[in-house]
Amino acid sequence: MDTGHLLAQLRAVASSPLVVPEPEPFAPAAYSTARRAPPAADEVPCASSTT
Image 1: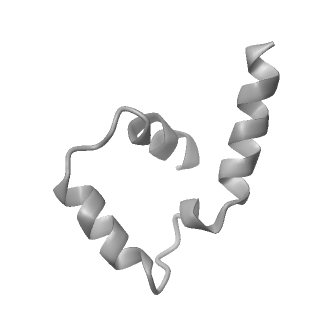
Image 2: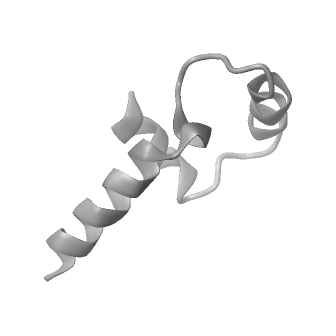
């Protein structure tokens, strides 16, 4: 049950351009803020999955 929902969310996240690991024109600012602030519990697994 959860696997299907997780897969759907993973696909949506992977499809979203905001998760693209490549350096985008607007990414530097976001990455700087994310690096300055402590990684959120949700961001840690997401980053590991994307890499």
